[in-house]
Image 1 (cartoon, rainbow, N blue to C red):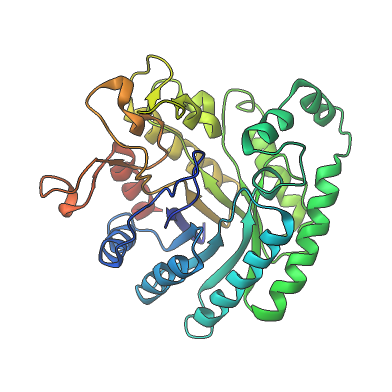
Image 2 (image 1 turned 135 degrees about the vertical axis):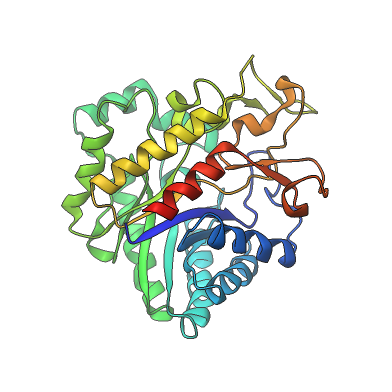
Length: 341
């Protein structure tokens, strides 16, 4: 792989409407990005979030350190017009950086059919998720029936890329959902958030190979796993074991923490990507601050986090370099893998 990367969140809108990263301290950001480069041995970082300014500030730090940045705006829960405006503004901010630091790729949003109103029926992400993966929808996909949301999505992406190229003059890609059938001719790179779970375990390699037909460099813009027994079977839905409706969020059942599950999953997929000559891969994710660890398993939200580090409730000298987290097994195993490949 040319790019060995990881996702880095600067604050996105969560399912309960809050920011995933409430405190944005540039000293902490710089320290974490230095760890990503020097200890994880990444040469690329996908920086995403709601605030364009936050993405730009973190991107400049990463670019100065020599990392290739994938500038990835995340403007969820809005309509298409608002999304388009946000994407174009983000592209303009990315171009200001690219003229100084050329190693920057622009990502035209992520899984827009799900996270933007108007493509898939449903007012909320949860409504759209249920409609997307309903038995009827799955049956239509199995039969190869063309879906209207793909037609609308491609029309939106075509318009977005036209507007992006007016203000941004570097490489452009899109982080697609695996259910989205994207017209990749308009992009420089083909990108997909490709998770493996129980339902696609036997067909995962075939699905990965299918992206070679795009005749574009294939980039896995997100893949990851949570750290509990059975999380590898849940794949992209591993987070769903948290009940956010309660005053104090808890896990919705009895789960057993198992960091080896997460680590093994990441390494197995990285081996697959190497075998299939994937151009770039980005682990999801470095840290999820809103999924905090707790000694009580029922309240240990970090089990449902895709972060390769364990988010703690407070900073402290007893934690890693005085930061608000502790490395999980995946942190060390990923570092070793990236160092040797």
